[in-house]
Amino acid sequence: MNIRLGSPTRRRFLATSAAATAFTTLGGVCRPYISRANDRPLITHGVQSGDVSVDSGVVWARADRPSRMLVEVATTDSFKDIRSTTYIDALPESDYTAKLLVEGLPAAQDIFYRVRFQDLTSPTVIGEPQVGASAPRQATGVRSASSGRVTRPDKAGASMNRAGACVLTRRC
Image (cartoon, rainbow, N blue to C red):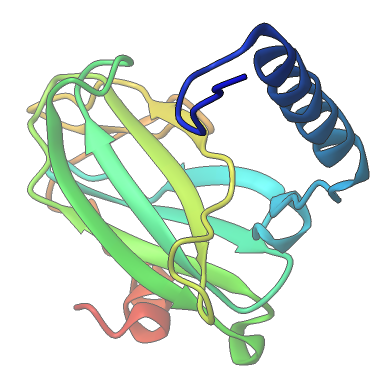
């Protein structure tokens, strides 16, 4: 009987198929599932915006650990037209809270911001994003997102909150 080593036989095919199926099935069951979900920084208190002026505003959030806050700003909720992307670190000195002054915003438009935190030790680990929005700012005044009151442009941004945000972020 002449059987060549390279020629497939039905018995060899069935044995190889059974071994491959068993290896795949048992390998999938025995192999531990590695999830990075617990490594992702979390936003603990939601995202907030405030101290809105004609062309700027402050965005802040708090993380559950030292991380980098990434902020994307757009004029549509689909974020197809991202106008700016900036970041600031949330460190223990600020109780893991990051405040960022976003400037150069278009007047009289809705502003949407997307915030997520990035792990400082492993930059590829990024938490789930949270989206917020601010009301349209008027060209003749500033509409506060929290109270709805309109402030004159010469008074916009003169509050202590804005000055405090500039000190915390060192971006002013």
